[in-house]
Image (cartoon, rainbow, N blue to C red; front, side, top):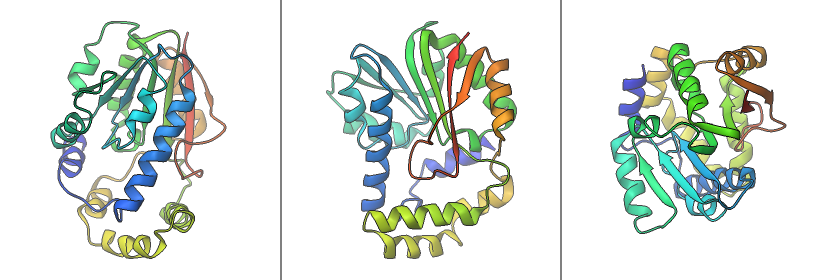
Length: 231
């Protein structure tokens, strides 16, 4: 499952309907992550960061920003984009998982859990528990509730598009998605869904005290986010 999804993200795709969509999406995510940084010396890991076009906004708020993605082409693009930036490092997942215990003050896992089998997700939470410093925070966001329909995701995207001047492109992009590899992979594997109680239970089992956040990261507020702190 994860290998096929990584292969999808490792090549050109049309998840973002145009450059405007991609830019406003990543700018919003970066601003919201930056708002979570509580110290200018904070050590931050964005795990499964994607193209992170505006990661410099996060880096401006913290001491060091580690960008981690499983797709080699995405990492190569990040390394080029932020070459010479003193606060940003790009890591593969295995390198991130080898960081020293308590090395991080903030870990962000945004829009990743739905592409993992439950056992993979639980193993990742256990790794994060080892990496998070006392007093640190783990944000797990874009969690899809069991009852959420694909139509709700479409509605959220169209609303976001209308607010950010790419509505016509979004309509065309949704039509293209019907025939895309993304749709075929989603039909084959589905996406992982978790209820609020399920997420709180998994985070507790991994050694965190957790609560549902007041809002999700990004534009889709029908999905959920959770803030977790090490016990």
